[in-house]
Image 1: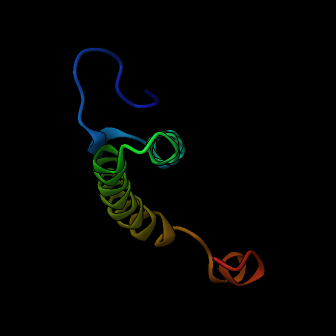
Image 2 (image 1 turned 180 degrees about the vertical axis):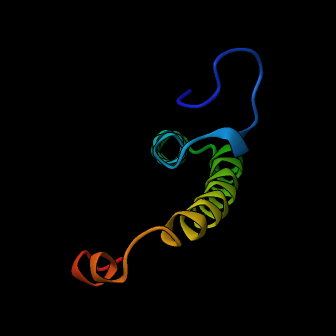
Length: 77
């Protein structure tokens, strides 16, 4: 964890990068579940992805307040 030194933590304490890594992992699990016919577990994982996306949107909203307008335009942020 980038910002949590030790102990327990919640997904709200993930950095944006850590959350994207989690999304990648969970999508991979869901794809594997679909291949194996376990649609219920795939759906559970995809629901988790939806929660992670909400988390990223909230973090990005905070971060974007600190990005200059010219950088937003140049980098298509």
